[in-house]
Length: 309
Ligand code: B12
Ligand code: SF4
Ligand code: SF4
Image (cartoon, rainbow, N blue to C red; front, side):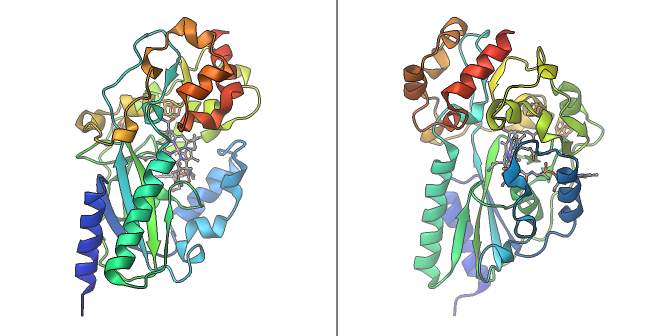
């Protein structure tokens, strides 16, 4: 009979072969410490208009309520760090996570391959793959599995590779060997992210008021941008990298090797003047299969206009 240890080794080695940066596994169950924190985050309205964050409170805190018979949460990270940059320093900025193909589809393919490999090798295993598609507290699970600590900017950080990576999970009904030693907090007395945030969205160490974050304002908010943020957007038109750019641990970021994350053709060469004139057609060509499509042409146009004011 094959042991839990061998199954665990198999899964971690498959994850590595699929290009994931790291993989850690935890026993599925109720996230006790996070429950009151999530509750107060929601009570404070930190989710702004992201109504989906209010849904499925119980499932979000307990994956056994989300996946039938769930026993293990396999957390995975996928690196997106790049040295590619937009050529015109005056051009409205796009977060580097959105230079290439939409990470949701890139990661979903890999997760499904991992799940298939598990089912082929181990047998009848029920499971589901998640990348932002369901109420799962990605960072809490990754932290529990020893993949890093949650920094004062509220991102998961690894001592070896910084924080420019995505998180995802496969949740299955199979017992595995668990990573039970969470990484220690290595923020120390540093406050660089809090000091640098252009909109003062990091309202306390480890707590981001989502409704003030440029990422929310430029991507999630569907209405007009509040005037209080005029002149504070640091020229970001899609997402924001500031609290990661200033983080000393990102000196250890390594370049991603995922071909799909290479910047889309022509995207980095668009000048400031050309962004002002962008049409629906150019938008559709530049951002085919890109995460930027989430904000739609009208949203990106709104953001560009707002930066000009
Ligand atoms: C909603 C959301 C957002 C919102 C809200 C941000 C947020 N911090 O939650 C907005 C739109 C603003 C956003 C922005 C970004 N996001 Co986002 N987002 C999510 C999403 C979908 C849910 C996160 C969530 O559950 N938030 C709820 C709150 C309650 O969680 P939290 O902030 O971690 O809150 C904890 C703390 O507040 C803490 N807490 C509360 N009080 C106290 C008190 C003390 C003393 C302590 C210690 C802690 C503490 O407890 C809470 C629960 O654990 C996840 C995907 C997922 N399914 O997890 C991606 C995710 C977190 N985002 C991600 C990314 C990459 C980003 C951006 C970098 C994108 C960009 N470049 O523009 C920015 C970063 C902004 C930032 N500094 O957080 C990645 C993070 C990867 C990583 N390395 O950590 C994720 C995991 C997506 C993914 N699949 O990879 N995001
Ligand atoms: S992503 Fe930008 S706006 Fe949001 S918390 Fe970080 S620095 Fe602030
Ligand atoms: S900038 Fe400093 S305080 Fe912020 S997450 Fe990085 S190490 Fe922690």
